[in-house]
Image (cartoon, rainbow, N blue to C red; front, side, top):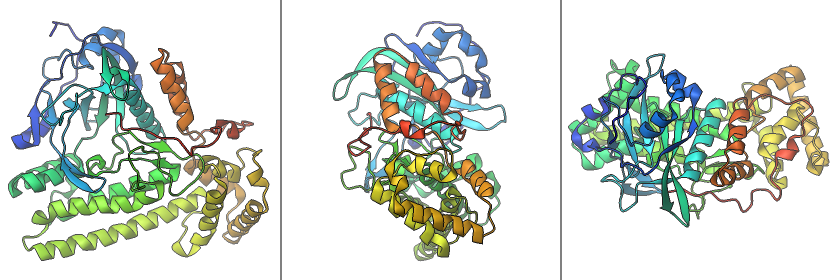
Length: 488
């Protein structure tokens, strides 16, 4: 690799490699032909003391493509397994390499990972590379989720490689640098359970607790406490997804992080016209990960984590199962309570209870029947704009609206109070699928103008634009035939 004088790099760590060797492979990224910086997240870079790097785009391209490694970096790929569409399989970082771990300005530890960095022993015949469209999609979606206030991995840089990758067609190669509080997944624990000793499972548990839940260290049953903490994080995350109409698309256990962050953004999308059974993924033929199924799937995924922790929960397997089942039952209650409260906040009613659900159910049924836009319907209710669509002039809508007004009056909630709550809960701007696709097509043709426009406006997703007709955001013909792909 060429000898380059790099801007100062904060101290890097590699605490993950303190785990047994079976959890990772020490490996360097495969160099690329001609790296060029395409996107650099200046605000995120500042959080890690990397602000000065923007003055040296050549150095950024070299380091964040994996071509050149500053002193102190000791890259590795992680091993993990997972249930993909319900079927267990051995996986691992097949096209990703961990650069190292860095502290942000608040002292919190984060992974920096190259995606598209070349083959590892976990590649399973893949080329280890990534295409530009998939990496830009991850950058756009992850940053949008961040500004929507949703826990997520983030994107620091996209570098083109000067090489092509072959998918359905020849595409431009790229490397994305992903930033995460860690890349430990439910699938990491499944890997340990199936392929490692009990002592190695314990080592992974203790490391994960130290990194993410240090307040649990003194608890008598560490495994059970850890499982409960992960459940609560995932409950909050899934309710956020449902709040903004986000469909992840591949909620496999290897895409379920123990930190409670959104991770991996291949076949993901946002609802336009509402359908509880909406699927955007080209590979989800049976609708396993449809919008309405996401709450049930996270329960299933967490049951897989519980299963992997059974040897550490109790030496008596039957007692371990009983304790894990108790927590899973509690999880259903936490999730349902949080979900119902969120639904109430979407219509300006705080502290909604299960007995009050009919008013929301009627609204969602109306939305389903009329394919009403998920985002805009709540803006209409709030009074953020006056819709031109005929569905909002229908008797059914007006009847429901009158019922809603009576409900808030009975509760002593003023329309202004309801509006304030809705403005905090409902975004005005989401990454509309057709706008995202236009931006990606524009980028493939050599221009980042539309990508940058989306990135800029999604920094203020809850800002209302007075006098704006939000119906102009909608795709012509809706989302009926829209599909997304994993990009691997």
